[in-house]
Image 1 (spheres, rainbow, N blue to C red):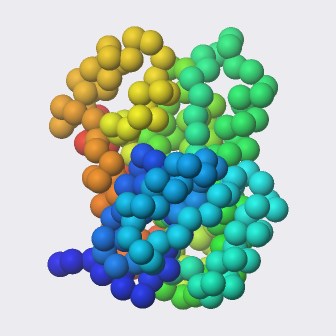
Image 2 (spheres, helix red, strand yellow; image 1 turned 180 degrees about the horizontal axis):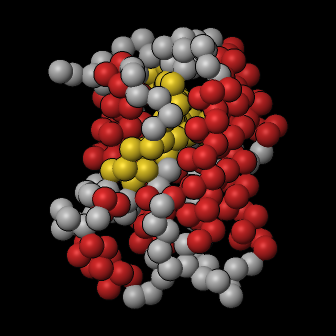
Amino acid sequence: MTHSFQNKIAVVTGASSGIGLGIAQELAALGATVIITGRDKNKLESALSTLGPDASQFQVDVSSLSELDDFYQQILSRFGRIDILIANAGMGEFEPLGQITPEKFDLQFTTNVRGITFTVQKALPLMKPGSSIVITGSTASINPGQGLSIYGGTKAALRAMVRSWILDIKGAGVRINILSPGPVDTQSLHDFLPDPVDAILQSLRDRSPIGRIGQTDEIAKAVVFLASDYASYINGAEIFADGGASQI
């Protein structure tokens, strides 16, 4: 079986690099008209060049409600609807208890929880029955590890919220699921980890039953499955893509 997203309008937030860009590339390769967002104009333009002639990019900070409103108004004017929403924009900070700052606490919850909430809520009027929302979570929702209590808390909050959201929109015909990756080999992961980075990466490989960390295209394929009609009876689920590490 081959997924096809011909004539589908897909929005991927936080898609200027890493996992988000990988998801956008997979959707574009399968025929979707892809719209990506991000905060860095130069990175967005570079990402757009990999997505083909039908893709578009918008500079959007998902923590800004006014920017989200402007973005969705432009989507309505240009495309008329959203068939697939990948709410991927997010961030994290390494902050052990005793070193947590109010500023970084607020930044993580504002981006990861508030940003996702209003990215989803403001998109719903543009989504018709059969549409799909996939939120990028993290295995930190159940196993945050040392120094990741706040980041893990934001991802756990999303899991709880999705359980309620599918009841709130019951009958709308729009599915909402979470795809939670484990460690993925991206520049963001390398930048995120504290020193010694190489030793921590090796410990992550050792912990995985597969013996390695993930690749961007593996996460993208899992997200695309959840967004597709092949997952039409999957709703409100958190699916872990981490080589089995969360299962042991």
